[in-house]
Length: 331
Image (cartoon, rainbow, N blue to C red; front, top):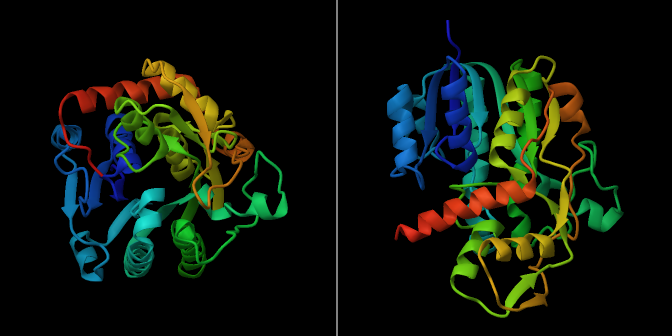
């Protein structure tokens, strides 16, 4: 009998790609649940649903009664639903608190009254955005680093605060109620179809507008970017490998580069001939971030395959094609 798998937030960037991977590589009975703030009219999404007979449940999951549409028995639940993006955090921090907290609590209470085998909760490296800055912890950074933000009232950190709540919530509900759970913390996942609220899509739009001199915000800051196919494989491994209950894994790469390197190479891909100008970074942005992925490598067999230049070219090619098609910039 095939496993019943639910993807809460399965129409989003990472959720859709996990659904696509599972549909093509596993004989599972898939359900995607989402409010479809984005993704419903996406041709790729509709094609995937039609090709593999994926069940789709649409609704506002900040309303606890919406969970009644899901049923009450799943072997695996991927909890991906949340509002993300630095732009959203800075512009609607109150909504990030409201929506993400409601999604976490409602999902936990639905699990309480259901028969669920395992839940994977997707978290973020933003949960220790202040740790290295304030306390000088080592980089690459392991999972055991204390979770820390620097300024509790800064809107940038509202997303991180809700993800900390989720990590604590799923680990403690699982311990008390007896279901399995695993946490993955994503590190700068990118790729086609990720919307326009993140750094790499921003670059595509800015270069196409012909900005010159091109401002390089935070040029000396570093990040380790993870291409979407690697993030998906790591996530599925964390769900399916034995011995991962109550564990936390970094899903990313250790291919650490500067933002200046990222922007200059993007400029090459976009055939930019103008000048660059270094500029101050965005408020609340940390100077360095790179995960230690030793635990995922040794316990999950996770090994990233797509290096950043290759992934960046694939991503820029997709965004150029999308924008050349005359479609609106979606969220």
